[in-house]
Image (cartoon, rainbow, N blue to C red; front, side, top):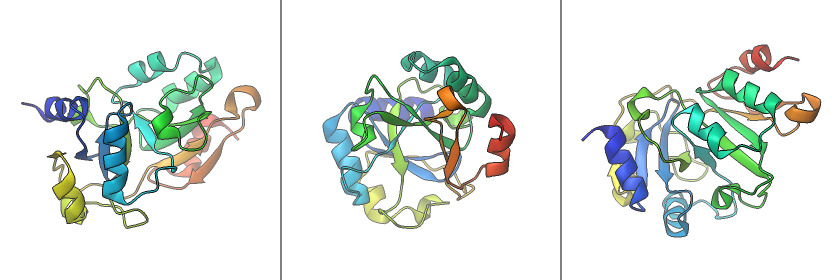
Length: 198
């Protein structure tokens, strides 16, 4: 069975998966399963009210699931994704509420450049595979042993870049062309500016 098939089977069965993203090792689960999300947060020691990102493994299904995004925002997504960025986008329909924390009107969206998992059809709730506040995991051995032991599936992708995604706020982009980098990461802010403009 391919890594993508194993990954999707574990997630759709309600499991928590340790997997190699295009940045650092991550944790993934079904974004609609209260129990799975609670388990993922418990493994990390993360507070339940902190938001996480929803990850799709191709851009087309992400756009299909978020039809309310305006044309300017959709065009920005098409230029930035797939890639090592997390984009905060408006979420007026309150989709994926378990990932949104205290602000259901905002969704964190990830579409990694990750060919090994490109066949995964289901979106996942995703967070880094570290103890809350701990160092990001570049190698599987860097993922804390209790997290690896508590996961239902662990995928080893070798050594990764080790720098998390760049977080970009696009919530004001549709109407005002406003954007900002909230966390510098693997993609340089200058590269974001080249795509989105000043």
